[in-house]
Image (tube, rainbow, N blue to C red):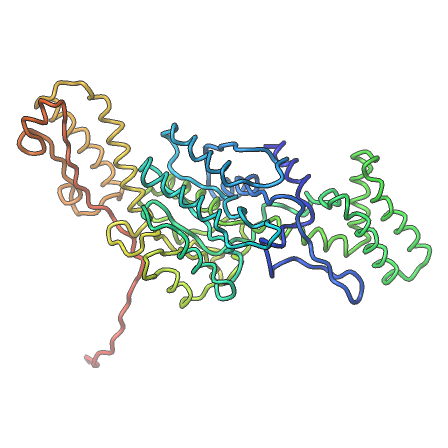
Amino acid sequence: MAKAKQDVAAIAGITVNPDLFSGDEEDFSGGKDSKYFLSLDGPYYLLYRSINLFFQNGGGACYIVSVGTYSAKEIKSAELASGIELLKKEQEPTMLVIPEAVSLGAAKKDGATDGAECFTLQQAMVNHCGYEMKNRFAILDVFGGFQDNRDNSCIDTFRLKMSTNFPAFSAAYYPWLNTSIVPVSELSFRNVHTDNLDELVKLLTLEVLENVPSAKKQDSIIAEINKLTTIASKSAAENNELHKTLSAVSPLYNQVLTGIQHKLNLLPPSAALAGIYTMVDNSRGVWKAPANVSLSAVSSPTVNINHEEQEDLNVDTAGKSINAIRTFIGEGTLVWGARTLDGNSLDWRYINVRRTMIMLEESVRLATKAYVFEPNVANTWVTIKSMISNFLASVWKRGGLAGSSPEDAFSVHVGLGETMTGEDILEGILRVTVLVALSRPAEFIEITFQQQMQKS
């Protein structure tokens, strides 16, 4: 991790790619009549900061699939897709997140920012979860989701280009997040590309000439500023001292670093939501909807959403519901949605319902492996039925199943003439049918007030 952090700092440039963040660049004044826009030199890597955001929000043990190095000139969709293929051999992961999917197709020189490569990769994620593995859940980011949907229609584009196959195994969140993962104390002139140091020297010198009245003090500060052109030959201690000096004497230098910090802290929300899922699973259970939970290390969403805009996110004719991240006064930034992309389905509309079923299926499947090649007779059937019933009863007691009694919450069926035929037994097949009543979240609370006549 320390090495990854160092690499990110080395390639961070001043901020991020202007093609990816068109219309939202961090700018700073350079003299009275000019402005400069900060841009990134190289690919927009998100993994390291996203992992930090994951752990800040309750994340735990996770699998990180390496598909390349930070020295690559671009992030390639084929390499990220190859990482999905490697996960086919792993049974433990329950969620799939690729934060850098939104970086695909964003740095093209021809200005192409339609996100076609991003959507292709996200469709591969959903296909992996819902068709190939059936035991994990994909958390998706909206391409361009740092911008207001009214300005660039990022939600409409997402719904148009995302496949409708297996939508119940995925959920999407909007908008992106302004985080506090990268503190300004970690940044310095070393984050500025060496080709731009001369320009930075000119800007800082101009600031001194315009704002420092004393000629002697001007010469002293400018001498320090000129040291930026020789930092390659200086020791780390000397460069650290220079950074402290510039921070103390130059407001513009601090403004540049703040701009770098702001852009490096602009992150898609999927990693934070993976942490929220983990935290809710550990504290309440997988059957609790991962919503109405505050996000840590997040100052605000990039777009403020009102009730009318959220209604458009929740309900769509194609059923592709998008979960909102909203700020409420006195409560901070909350996850305010718990729907899968299968928003029109009454069975799989909610994330916790789909993930609870995955948990039950996998738990029962792994437990019954102990009975493979056991005699297919009544004793085995009773043992399996008791084992599954005891497991489901424990889930019901913890609130994972709906019903006032275990009989209302679940039932287990196994046996000849009940779930199997004589031919099934001859073919070595033992069939078990499990019926469960899953609890669903109270997404809408309706309160009715009426006037009544005075009674006394």
